[in-house]
Image (cartoon, rainbow, N blue to C red; front, side, top):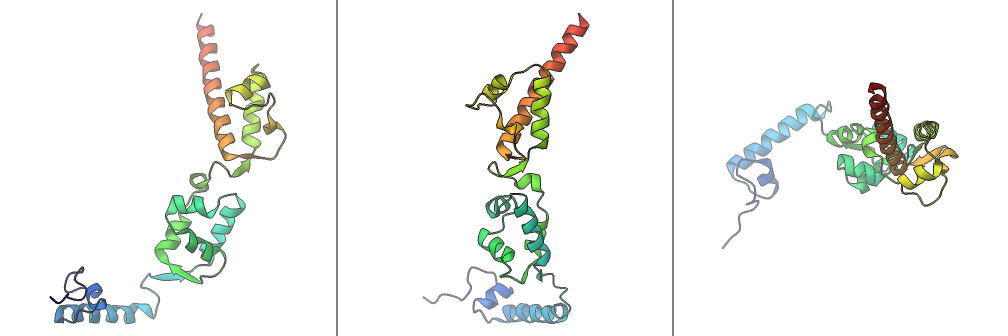
Length: 187
């Protein structure tokens, strides 16, 4: 029994023609594809490939923020190898859809827990909690830290996972404090 070329694609499509089918419907589909390609490809209006420089620059910006290829891949779905080739200037042109996916990444969506972020906000939140009367030991315990002091007060950078935990604790304790103050004011 003979297997028809490109049997997984329907007749009348370029895909089936590319797989070897030469029926009239598939030949016509291929002819239309070539005509469209000639008409639009010369002016690069077909939307297929674009210069990769803007994506490369954006990947470098994300890298400087501590956002690596694995995090970018998780957010936009572009293959890590392709991301490396773009960033390393091994690809001069990329698909427009790839560029769109890379440029649509928001840094906050792609930061992994191990990335380092600016410690300013976290440090400010810890200082506000200390001003409310919490001790460093108590805050360290609530943050599930083993040391009795908080190193966050010393550095310029903090892991994103630590900043997130500090932010949650800050919101929790400040909400409790405001509710308690409100309750005391009402009495």
